[in-house]
Length: 316
Ligand code: TUI
Image (tube, rainbow, N blue to C red):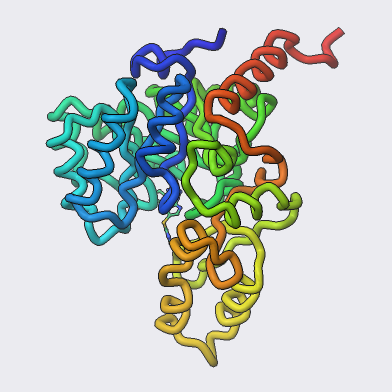
């Protein structure tokens, strides 16, 4: 059994978080993962305060296990949802796509364990100083908003830079990658892409099918020109976007911004994977079957234990 400060302190069975994926991580998925022994997270994403409150209450109906909320700091409603998590007695908040510094005192004062996603050692150190319980070091293999460093390079550097627990994220979809994360010094993992095809995940079947059919080289990073790089599955949409992105004399930043508006919702909720954008990590091609969250977690940890237990097959 793999047991670390993460599952012990958070009152969960396995040291695994489900990524707080925008337009994906609703009460159904979060409760499914929490009931399966991991930490489910509701993505506050672009919800306003009352929408998030309703989703949190739904999740409380579906599970009596701990779950958390992920706050996307670029959201226009970040201030409102920052208050809602304290009012609703949420115990764990993860943050993404920015620096949560201005909320930290309030959250920590309310007894919340704050666990920011960090793409660099500098931000990890800043978060430690501000009282973060742990950090999630997310490499650019992940889906969605990505940093520059890979998980392999980032995780051990963050582990060396801080003395709080480090959770590895980005490029983790099977037991070998869970085992590797522990070898790099992480004490937990965050998994996104593999949970896209969990039975409890309510996204459109067309989106799940894109993940199930993906090949290794099927993801691309768009949006660098606007400063918001996002990894997604290649499609006719990403080809059009990329063409516009590299043709700055003909397409303004505003036109590019407009091209990106609403495309994740279109794919995830409407199932329009032609005009919409399917966010996914580089491990999408390793995700080959839809199954309950419990089976995903059991598979990840059973295989990770086998790998870690056997140490290394090259050591004779
Ligand atoms: O946040 C994510 N993944 C996301 S957010 C998202 S919604 C979105 N849609 C369109 C454009 C942009 C976002 C989809 N996927 N992962 C966590 C993450 N955070 N990855 C990288 C970062 C990050 C980057 C810079 C965290 C902090 C940061 O700090 C910059 C600073 O202010 O110092």
